[in-house]
Image 1 (cartoon, rainbow, N blue to C red):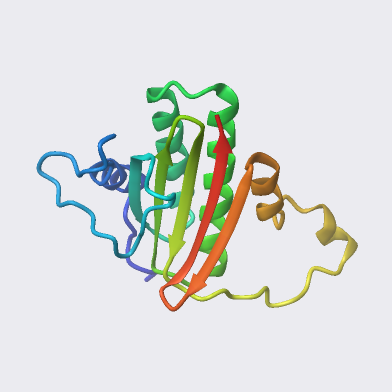
Image 2 (image 1 turned 90 degrees about the horizontal axis):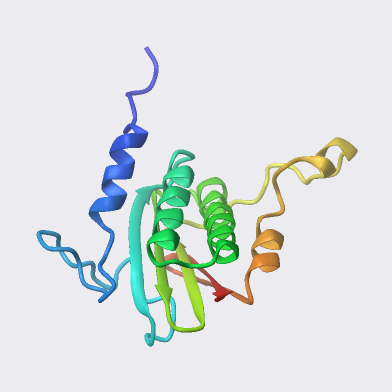
Length: 175
C-alpha cells in the first residue's frame, strides 16, 4: 500500500483563496487575520497587501500559486509584462522552496504600491544542496537550475534573508 492520499489540487486552490487578503491588508470577513508569523510584510509597509497564501511545500503548490498570482494581476489590471514577471518569479521562488528547503509549508505574499509589485516567498526550512554537482554536459541544458537567474531577469531588485525561521526571498517588479 502506498503513501496516504494527499490533498487534491482543487482543495489546495480552495485553501489559497481562503487566505487571500483584501486590498486593505486585513483578512476577508469570516477569516482569522494573519499575524506577522510566519510571514512579515515584504516591503517597507507603504504598499497594500494584495494576497497572502500558505500552502504545503509540495510540487502541486507551484501551479496553484501561479494561478493565484495571475488572478491577482488581472484583477488589479497589471500590465501583461508585470503579469508574466509575477508568474515566472512566483513559480521559480516557490519551486526553490519546494526542492531545496525541506520546509513543510511555504508562505507567499504580494504587495503593491504605485510603482512596483513585491512578491515574497518564505519557507521554514534549511537550504539543502544538490546531492551531486551539475557537472555532466547533459546537465547543462536541463530546464531547471536557473531559478534565481530568471528572477533577476524579471525583477528590478531581489533580496534573500536567511534566519532561524527559514528563508525569505523578495523580488520587486517595476510597474
